[in-house]
Length: 174
Image 1: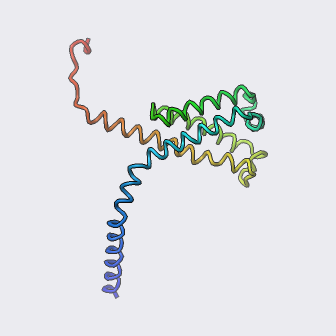
Image 2: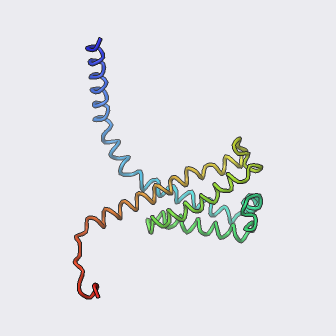
Image 3: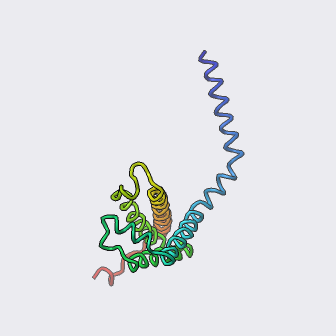
């Protein structure tokens, strides 16, 4: 019995090893493109939803009015949010200040998720209305923002750690 289990385990390991060898180029490609693709797709989504806030701010004003942020419910505030989303999108697409832009987009998505959780009459939480489903997608976008921040922070840490240490001069010590 033990010999049969060992043989079955060896076969599975061999099959897994073969599959890994065959798929290795695909895994390498995905590893190389995942972070830029996530950053660019997040930028595309942000530019789109930011631009829509200028087209018709009324639905967002209504959502904000129904939330704990009702004092901010105005077309002007929605336009400011749209402008921040478009700025964040352009910076993400251009690859500038990614750690900080990721934090900004995380903050924007956290605001939307707060509305999601605090307005069950509108979102239907925990049973979701169409509006609730629309807002829930920001959970994935917030996670994407966290991934952008983490990837860029790791890249900067690796760059910083790879630099040789500079001795402090007497001028810096004074």
